Image (cartoon, rainbow, N blue to C red; front, side):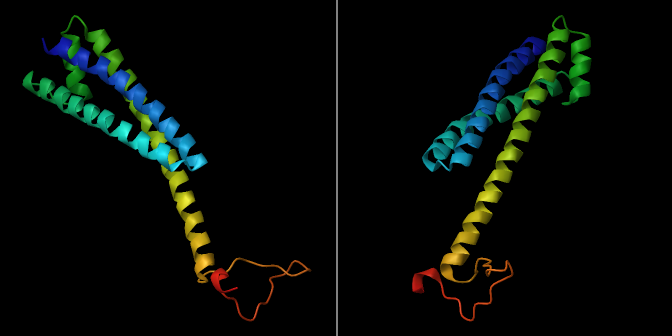
Length: 155
């Protein structure tokens, strides 16, 4: 009974993880285009998928523990060794792990884009506020010596 329930959870989560990976890739595109309304929409689509994955992960752990096994790869392998669907359990577990790893890597990539965008916006705001001045060059290519620099709002 536990093995078929686990297999169903793995199967459902593989589909959910694929959807999540598609959303994360769409999020990357929206980040590079700086499409904030689309980003907001994608975030609201991601939240339920993450909640389902978390819920199913907890359920898988509970099923393994109820069978007297550890809630890790070792416990799953022990259950698979006595199950008629053991090969499927292990294959689905590997597929889900690979998908979740890809989701994590894509999410880290998106985080780098977000940090780069934040730095760019911070720099522009600093220039506009006059706290930071852009590097200006004279006709010889050296740094220009400007006696007094004012914020662009006062220029």
